[in-house]
Length: 264
Image (cartoon, rainbow, N blue to C red):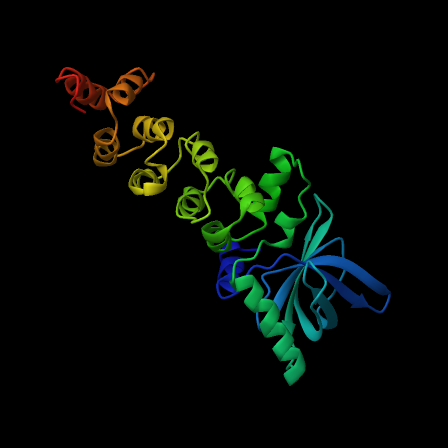
């Protein structure tokens, strides 16, 4: 299938990643619901379907909300390599009660709650499991989640390959200093992310963290200047000893250290 067609179809949808069931004449089949919207859903799993009428149940991960909807199968894409099938379903006209329940479910997704694929990860997931789970969630949803993610979700999203997701994490009001240290290990951070760290007053009392921010290879000089202005002589001496420190920054710190002992 043409990837551009898939992209255009999903542009107005909200990724869900929710448990679902296809009700077939041969029996019910478990699957997962993605790209849930007010007009349709993309189902994925070891399932079978053909164009025509279909009935589907979609549930929240906690099971406190579910909807059973009639619709039409518009497309079926079979991946022979991994044995899974994607089924695109358009919903039939909804009655008022079903429409209200669907609105509630979509609202939860828009609010940026962790998708099922992330919630389903074990306590100690492998790198591959995390990559697969993140790949199943749209970039827009991962960014939205990163802005408000709590500890568990932050641990997962810190391993996201997208600099935009890491930038959103940097602006999360619940971020802890240990989270910033973990993020600073990445060499794909955007300069704007490092500027955010340099401006954030939460890290002003943590000398080690400020040194890590100033010495990161992608920190803009203006942001590094802001950090070194806040360091005392001891902090400057530690900074200049950092391996791989930007030559211009090393020179600037060296000039500071040649000043009077009481001067920053």
